[in-house]
Amino acid sequence: MSPTEIEELQQRKIDLENELQSLDDKEKTLNQKINTLEEKWVVQEKRWAVQELEEKVNARREAIGQLEARLNELEEKMKTPPAKEHDEAPKPPEPKVGEEAHQEEIVVMEPEAAAERALESAEEPKKKRRFF
Image (cartoon, rainbow, N blue to C red):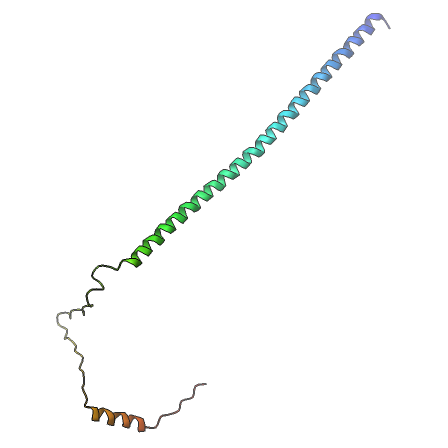
């Protein structure tokens, strides 16, 4: 082997060692970037999850607010009676034209007649009814 060939091989070895060191450095840098991005991704996923939960919480709060407003409205209605509905007696409906007004008859019986009627109904034998 000639001295120039040895020098070339030596130079080639040095170049390859430098390239290897450079590739090692690049690999470490890429791994660090990957780790950083993975951590950022995890953080971003957690942010999205938190944001989604916040939206659900806000929606639920709004629904509860509406329910509470409705409850308060109903409670207020219960406290205050409607105007004039309770003050006046209900009016019977007016008969339509062409219809006769039906009036109820009240029969007043003397006390003796009422007692006789009660005795008559008591004397009638009652039928026994059996249900199976």
